[in-house]
Image (tube, rainbow over all chains, first blue to last red; front, side, top):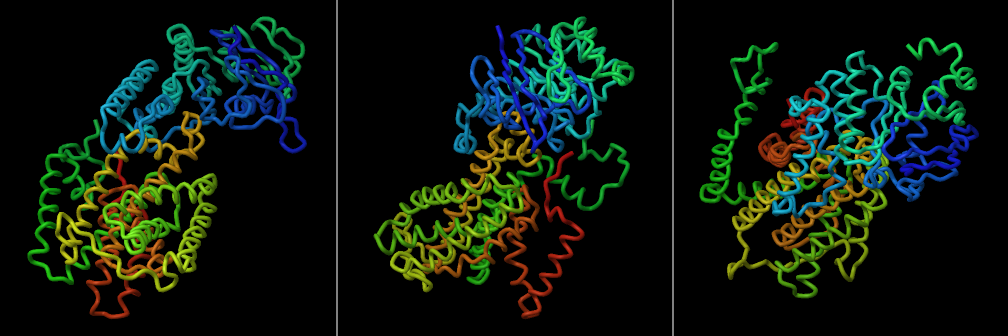
Length: 258
Length: 330
C-alpha cells in the first residue's frame, strides 16, 4: 500500500522552479531515501510535504487524503512527523519537555482543566509523561531527561529531535539529514534506530541524506532529484549505476560518498 | 548531578548574594513557610496600617493581577502587547454599564465581563496574532486606542469623555463593600487566585505549548501545535484576568472614564512586567509593587521622583535586562 503519493509537485520561487513536476510514491512500511546534489531541492520537497511551503501545483496524498492545503500542525496530527536539517530544539527547556511537545496534538485539556486539575488532566499529563519517557528510552537518552536541551552534546541533541518526532506517534517519519554531523559510531546507531523504528513501531521512513554509504545500506528505494526534477528512482543498485545519477554527482562523488 | 542548592559541590564560580538568596527559596520545604508568613502578614496589615497605606497596597494588588494577566501574553507566550488596558476597560465598563444602566447585581457582572473579555480577546487577537513581534505590537497599540476612543464616543452607553459615575457598591452577604479594607481584601483574594491560576497554567500542557511557540514557532508547528490558536488562547486568558480586575476596579472607584485606560496604562503594566522579570510569577509581584510603591516612597523629593524612577528603570534595563526576578533554569 502506498502511504505517501506525490504527483506532479511543482514549487516556484519567483521564476525559479525549485521543484519541477516531481512524482514518486512511498510504500507503507518501507525505508525510502531522497538524494540529490546540494541545492537539488530536497529540503524544499520536505517543506512542501509537511506544509511549511505551499506548492504551486500538483498533489500530495497521505494515506489517501490530499494534504496540499493543510497547515503543518494539521499534517503532523494526521501522522506525518519530521525532523529538521539544522537542529530546531526548544533549547531552554528540558529534554523531557522537548519530547512532551510531540504529545500536544494527541491531547486536548485546556485552561480550565489545567487550573482545576480535573481527573482528565491528571490522566493526560500521566500519559504525556509516559509516552515521552518511552520515546526517550527508545532513542536511548532517558538518563538525560532533566537536562536542558542546549547543554547536551550534539549527537544527543539529534536524538532528542528524533524522540520528539516519535512522540507525535507518526505513521510516516521524515528525517532531514539525520546523520549530518554524527561520527561513525553514532551513524551505526542511527541505522540501527531507523530499522528499529520501522520494525518495532511500524513507522514508514522517508529520509534525505548526504551520506551515500548510509543511504545505500538502509534504503529499499531511492529517489534521486537534481534541479527539482526526478532523474532516477529504484533500488540502490540500479540507482548507483544510472548514468544520469553519475552525471549529476560527477566530481562530487568521492567526497559525498566517503 | 547538578544540584545548585548544595554548598558542598565545588562550583567554578562562587555564588553571589543573589544566587544564595534565590536558592533559599528553591527548596519547597523552605518556600512554604515563607509564603505563609507573607500571606499572614498581608492579612494583618489592615489592623495596623492607615487608609493611605491600604489604598496604596490595594492599588498594588490591582496592578499585580494585571501584570499576571499580561505576563501570560508577554511572558509565557512571548507576544508583545501594547494595548492591554483595552481588556481592563472592557471589564470595568461591563460592570459600570450593567450596574448603573440595567441595575444588575455586581457579582453577576463578573461572568458577563468574562464573556465580553473573551469576545474582545478573540476580536482583537484573531486577526492580529498571525503577525509577528513588531507588527503585532503596533496593531495591539492601535486596538488599545480604538477601545478607548469607542468608550469616549459612545456617549449614551459609556457616558462619553466624562465616563460613568455612581457605580453602585457591591455587597457581600449583606455587608456593603464601601471601606478601603474591604477592597484591600477583595484585591488580595484576586491576587491569590491569579497567582494560583498562573502557576497551574504555566505547569500545564498549555503552558508548555506557549513556551514551545516562544522558543521556536516553526518547530512547535512541526510538532503539531497550532501556533495561532495557542497564541489566541494566551491572549484570551490574559484578557480574562484584566476583565475581572476591571470589574473590581469599577466597584472600588465607583466612577470610570476613558482616561483610566490610556496608552500610558498599557505601557505602565508592560513596564512592570518587564521590570519584574517576564514569565516569573514572583517577578510580577515584585514588578507591580515596585512600580506602585516607588513613586509613593519617594514622594518627599516631589516631581524629581519620576526623573529618578526613569533613571532607575534605564539602569535596570542596562545592568539587569532580564528583570528583578527572572525565569531561571539550571
